[in-house]
Length: 298
Length: 306
Image 1: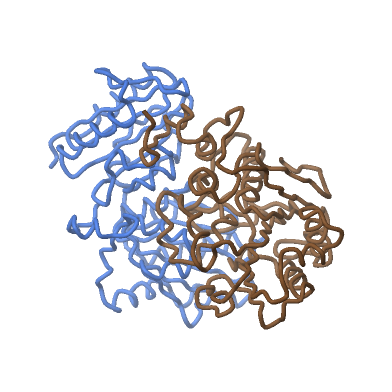
Image 2: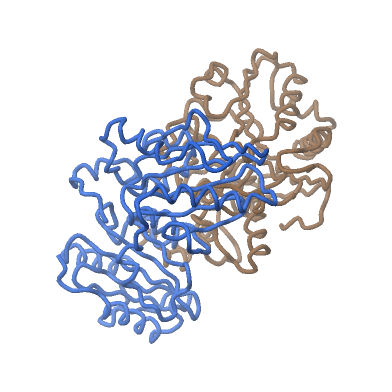
């Protein structure tokens, strides 16, 4: 008899019950073939440039613009970045750009500017664009939004495993409601009236990702590295899954052993297997690599 | 070192986090915490407006990771920035009132990788952050930038704050009950809740060991291999027996009378309950290793201590 998912134990994951993706997410061995609830493949573009990072929180804005442009063209298969923006955004859209303001590793302002330029180029008026993080529920543009763009850096996180694109929407609701079981139900926040079906683009910032925590909430640049990447996708789960693998591989290299995240980032796998938000299995992800290939870790 | 709260109140808490013993206290206690941060430390001057956050507002300061503190009896944190008259980078000091010494140790142990002695009950320095625990307080001192002088600065400021706190305490008695033989240094983690266990070792989505605000638990790693030992103290012998039965049913139904089973990763897990305690061994290299560690732990437990 199938076991109720809420009662799953570590041993069940070892047996392959309850979704191999979740087993992988809790630090158990990867099976030969994962399972997923999503039909079709999700295209994810990983673009890197070895010169884009000038330091922690210091980046070459021109290169970021070029990286985003190239990634958009590859992701949507159109001739120009403008065509791509026009394909996902209408001139009469009201657009909220959900960023992340964590002071040690915020969404880079150079990327915020590049996104804003893309929206303006698609004909959206300045007054119909807003950028916000913690105030999205009070922000009139976000409350009236017809489209959302989601962007944040990936970092390890003491309560959810990693700060992910999926998690970036937690501010659209009462965050505490999503904290149980290492934020396992985060994908639910993508099904609120404020968010449902609105997200046109996700940009996971991997310029200087954080791969390890100091205590519950501290930060030191020692645990970041100049990866110089952006992960661009319409499927937030697929983008997060790629980013998570890079973080995990970096941890293996840095620590010389397979050290699982604490806590495990199972909210990403569950966003696929329990909530159907996107694809978390690499067998359902078409990964396109652009730019700098050395030490890509995936 | 549990917080004496009614069970009904505990159940009403969202996310099964712990209530703060000081939550009902007045502004007097907030002021007192701020006053534990000296206005002047050598050439460092405290900023004019230290901030305080309590169990409800902690998320305004550190987002979701605030749950780590709320999983203990955290009451409030005072945050102050110290500026150097010698042009050194600013230093931020956080002084957490964790409710009692056991929980101050608990949050210190939560992600500890190393430990040094000489400040409070022990301290750890990682990068440009130094954290220590002392009495009911957990203190973190962080330099805005890492410089040639920042290590010395952090220690000076930490020592000065330590001098103003009550004397250091011993780690919780439960930690001292762990067998010494094979214990991996600094691997002990003290906590109360199911989600804290899953942070350290993902056991199950459900709370199959009936952990809660009234339970004390310590998880530690043992060598050889990477064996985990979990020791839990329950409010009563009856609670311990119920938790052991729940664990057997959910995790080791195949353990039989030996209370040991080979798990799907070719390791061995075992459990037992004794008086108010439940002992669980996870991922031992052999059945004998699991049994030996279990017995070594059980034999060191106090009995009839209710």
